[in-house]
Length: 470
Image 1 (cartoon, rainbow, N blue to C red):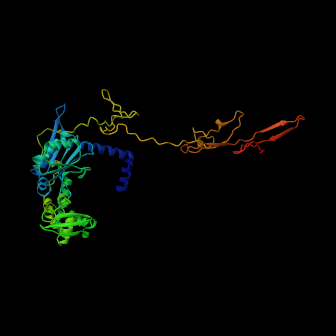
Image 2 (cartoon, rainbow, N blue to C red):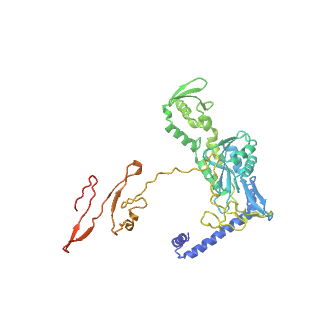
């Protein structure tokens, strides 16, 4: 990092600095950021007062707990702007998606959000809160806040979409017993890590401009949906037959369906689910030379889309203009107990060195806890490995690279060279090797005292045992 800072300063400002200076500046900046976090917690009540003063009618709740020293420590924070709440109730479908995600910052925690869908099928944030842990108690607190602000009562005629988080399921069942709770396999609404008042305000302003310039009867989402339906489903190839009571018989892709344009229903039930004509209803509309957008549900109309974004969040002022309250200061929450201190060091065995009176956190404690239906010991099947042999002596303890010629000498001190080849054991063939030895040279003396030198060599043939001179 200091090296990148050095290069950046040199390229932008044409100033040469040392890496030690860059590292010192980086450490000072990190201290400033840490101090800002603590100052922001101390002004948390003032921030809530600023929201209520700039956006009257909004809902803000700051929950804190008393520690052993009697100080107010941050526990959770909830906000729901009045303009967003009113627009969702008047112009959006009665669908609420709730989800939670981790906050990646110095102060750890989790963000819980409630989201809706506008006329263009885009995400519309309703309310959000910050908690320390995603558990049943925090989800129950968040759901009670949403229930009171949105006027959901017992949840009748509303739909809730979420994942299968246990705390969320029990909280929804307790607070909204009559709501239609649907589980999504994957997170349909996604994790909105960057849900903030400023980003929501900017998003509303951008969509207001887009909605004001759109001139069609329905939103761009519906237009794109119908165009894609016309291409993929091959609506022109469907056969349409008129019947009584304003119903139609449509034969499309080897299936027959009954369509009613007056009731806007089809036996495939896609019209009732989406609110947009299906391929069979589209075929009937083309047959009578009608406009498909006229048979779309009113939730997708451009007029309703414009009303959703004609008003937005009023901007908040900087911290020095916030109203100062008389309440006690809110302090930063302590780090979670299961989180390791950054000052701890490893002892080389996956354990952490702790101080006196503290328990050691082993590597097994940090492993993920497996479910009751999950195999406790899931190991991969062992693969048969090929045994390597030396290409010189044929032994399996080493290869030719690490062959030591000193270990293969005869008692007389002469070295022998052996060529060996071995087939794979999986094929069931026995290994065969051929040994060639260098002939020895010996000198013999005659009775007359003359010496003669005899050269002899022995060659072992693979098929016969005949000795031949070298």
